[in-house]
Image (cartoon, rainbow, N blue to C red; front, side):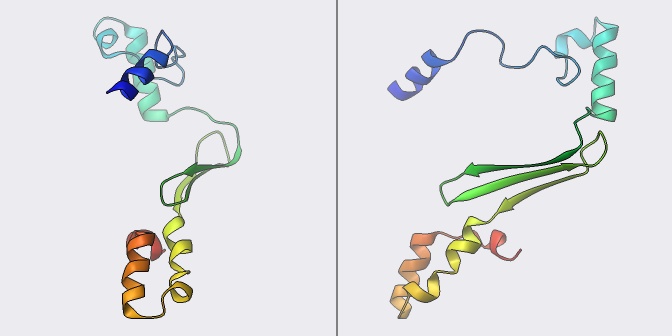
Length: 121
């Protein structure tokens, strides 16, 4: 509980979402009273937002290793997005070297804690 209180005390004051209506949906209470909010909501939901052309890869450190998010935009709209869950596949390659007997194999698999859905890719 003390850690949560410290984290809440460290949060900055103010809104947690951007005020730019070109990339963020307007609040729900404005949709019933403001025509501009309704138009921005409709355009963002149907058309999306424009991004600069190019590719980006962002690694995220997880408890099993590195995960990656990849996005590609050839025009002004995102065309591909992939999530790479590589840690289980890379870590599972070490099982042959670390396990000499069946008992070692069980302990090694328990230690690596692989996600089998990420391995079959």
